[in-house]
Length: 278
Image 1 (cartoon, rainbow, N blue to C red):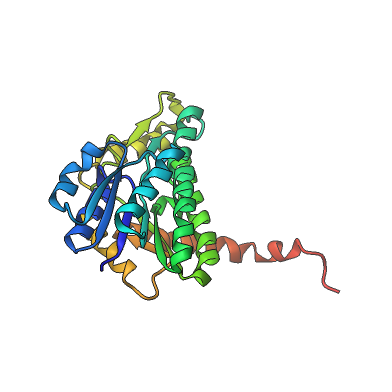
Image 2 (cartoon, rainbow, N blue to C red; image 1 turned 180 degrees about the vertical axis):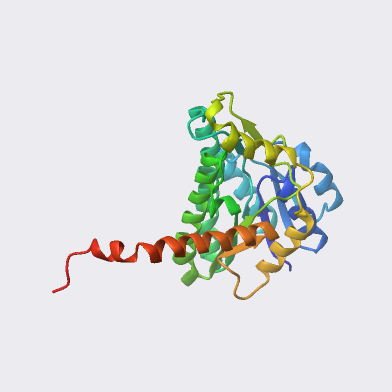
């Protein structure tokens, strides 16, 4: 039998593309969304191998129920995809606490709780693969999305630690780091701040406007990304981090160069902070 997938945030974007592609390839899939009617077309096309699961990752009871329903239907969970997430456009100073906290609840704490709920079953199986949908913004920060970057840096840090904790248990972890894809992230899935400070118009304001402006015209293809993610789960030695999109690869390489430049330039100062060697 093909693997069982549990995918969060399937109403649009990567979640929808990934659920559809996995089902087309013969996998069994729990298709999770806050409103199950949004994914009814997907499960109706694959009634024997899919199930619609109501899931808001900020509601612990729904997380428990989603995992229990998946196990009741398919008896196992082989791949967990933590895809549910939102964006928020604002300079750091412009950012509204309520919106930032909401984003952290979804992007970080919801992802963490989903992972914690599924891990006991993967440990019992001595197998499994967790795909955490992050962003190139979890490696490289951009003006106008600072707190969004912060959530994705948190996802990357959590995932890297988890990778090291569960590898001896037969469980794999991969961080998915896309650049611009034709999903709904820059559309209805991201909010704008209501606080505007003119001093940030040429930095945060411009970048946020640029991102909004090319929504629907990004170079990334969600279907190709979905196929790449599926391929990764069938690889014996998957990467800890999978960059998706030419811009993601370019941005990551630039970040490595920036880090190396600072590290080497300030190496003597870094080493000089230790107690002198006797």
